[in-house]
Image: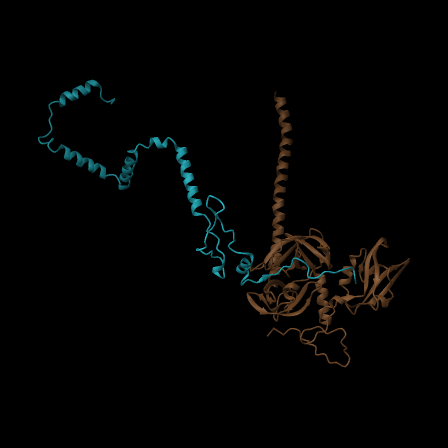
Length: 360
Length: 162
């Protein structure tokens, strides 16, 4: 009897130890989940605390009445980004910063990318610019905006995709599809990674709890154009691309048409050339042309590598102004100058200052 | 009681049988009894007297029949509490900020529409909504800005041209 009791107690010790270790593991696992959630919450709080001071509410009027949106400073001299639909065609723009309203003037409005740049004459905080190429699916991101008439509000979400096509049309360049709940008034809000760097600009809502943001590199390209030329200069070489039946050197983008008297035609490109690379962008599908095309700058020379038969050729093409963004000369009364009008021997009174300077 | 047995009590009674109270003792007996009783009562604190009075008053109604159903009494009390809470917490009807109050007011003198098609006089309810969409938009949008977040891109690329 004693032997039996001794034996059973001998088996009970390891059993007890196993139960204890299981309980410890379970409690550890139970503790780890809240800790990771707390850490994430802390990171979001930190991003919000650091970035919110550079995010502003923008109010303006347009032909439909008053509007309200969001913008954010990108340099310490009061330059800010917002959405085209907020600051692109509006007047009497004011920026609410630290509880005060300041008049803002428009530096540029780019319909193609969907953004506008405004300027406020004050020393401002600025958000650091990040790199959207480092984003992956499910990367956590934070947006800070001014929904409705409420105060600055953080929204937390994740990258859901990198899309070039939406609602049957093609974006000018790849857009970030973000699963976070956007609200009205947050057009132009910055999309931030958890380092607090801007990786995109919130432009469009997409179904419920999802939205599209322009990658910050695309906005920076527009800003770079503005710094260099005083305006956005979308480039164009005059080639039309279609999908090839079979890939050549890994690319299905074949030139369908080469328009006459365009940089592509003058450089020697022909229809049937399979595009392999434009600048630094490798081309595999026709959709890749969109990204490469968006970053072309009129006046810049870009190397374009194509496959013609079995021969790989590189053309150095100087891009021209994109026809879609080419300015049409207008008469002082706002009407377009007829194309047939002869410019020779006529002085055209161009209104160089399209909008009055509203900053005192 | 153990100190005295029957014999001792008998002896005591035998000794006391010829003793008489002082003359006039029974003349003022009742008055003296009440005085002593009052003096005894006044030695207790006032709160205890009140409690005793209240207890006597309550038990005079014979509550034992009610206390035999404590569950029923509790249920009734809980129901009464819930109903009273619901009554007091009923939300007020939502008020809408209206620029022009006349928009929302239904004319009190609107003639009810009656039909003679049925032998029984049947009132046809006026199905006109209080506000149409346009009025609603006016009341909600007046004075508030348009909060911008587009649902479609401002520009599309038509084809793969570059």
